[in-house]
Picture 1 (tube, helix red, strand yellow):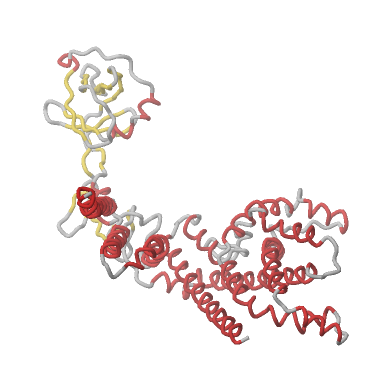
Picture 2: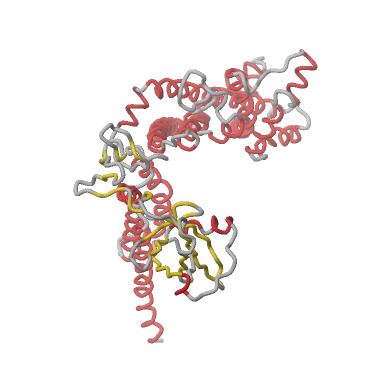
Length: 514
């Protein structure tokens, strides 16, 4: 028994030590791949975990800590990372760090004066040999040693004259095999007995090559072939020549509030942003209005005692909510097809019209509201049915005695009593639709596009889909600008959430007083 107690006394510290070492190893790996912010976040979480599970003052926190850690990793970290990216020029042209771009440019080579050699690749068991033949003297043939060609790391290999190599090589491999090994062959430098070196300059040729740029003490790069000097510009994120021309690839630098200034002052971004923001608000508000109105109307009808088969109606009307949204959206996309969709076939048969739902901006917006109302009304209907059930029946009995009809009952009793508890849900629904990316992406893709602006933006884009197109579909893929727009959206949604919390508190206070 004493042995068991002693084992338990040492078991917990031992497990804590092993866990701490494992976390430190993970943090080191994450930091080594360049993810400094994530490594710092993991280190903070590990320190909090160590404190929470070893201190006697944090007993309650031990149960909450998994949720707190998940919130830090999956909510706070992405939010901080996105905000940080919004202050940089991170884009498809400025993906890499400065040191990596400098290294890439210094690895560039150019064809230097000297004889060129035809080369061929030959198998040698499970390895390869390279055969070089002087293009001006076909009797000068050289053979390399056997090469594995498995790692594209820089490697210098000696070649010997064919007579000295004393090996019999097989037939040359076809060009497609050379292409398959091209990356590894390019990493090779073949060295002759007199010290001259050649590198792969084409799929058929090895020739003398030397670094294109010579680094300077001030960080500049001098083109050995032309004498042009490139200097790093830490404002634009590019190496530039004296004329200000960029040399790609660029590198990441901080740009401060430039993206935010572009959003609100640059006409190329200001105008579509304003249009899209207005449409986002209108889309969210009308969706909530239509879905809530239809849901409330159906809830009132389904609570009518004289309606027979209410359970069947309730089940049928709830089905749109049970079907996954992305399936319903794609089905509607087919139904609204201008030429083959059933909706246009019916309209054409009845009225002789075939509306261009996806080409006309107004019709496209109308279609989006129809589809989103269809997707949202069942939820509103179920909520309203529950709220109506909570209204005391004696109010309706007294109203009936006074001779009031259904409309008077709805206006005077039902609507006033359910609208206040329903308000927080309406606000949360507004916030949800403010970021309803799936609907826009699957139904219209934001199109039809604006024809009078130069950035990728459509008449049915909402802010979140506009941000997605800016980040992943524009030719420039401006991740920094997209992150700045995402931050603006976050602030707007946060403001809506604060309003929702305010209304929720008011509703709770009002219910408490009742």
